[in-house]
Length: 97
Image (cartoon, rainbow, N blue to C red; front, side):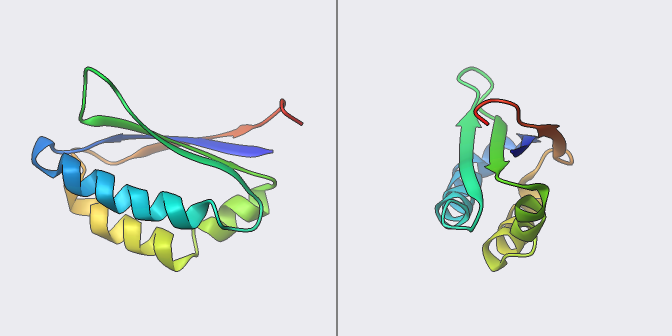
């Protein structure tokens, strides 16, 4: 399994728009071949802080995600909403196997 954790800080005036754009990305991402999870989390106290947890069967599946129309649209749509550049870290998933 290939997992990526992406931390995003959103400008406070764009939180609702970011959530809506991310919902569309989520709904399409979970339909992708090889997708195991695509969770979007919002910090309960720091509401401008989001975590995207993406899990794919293989790294190739994760890379293919970055070429999909819904991801490319999300990336363009939310670019100006971010308070700073998003930070993504990839992991090798061990369990579940």
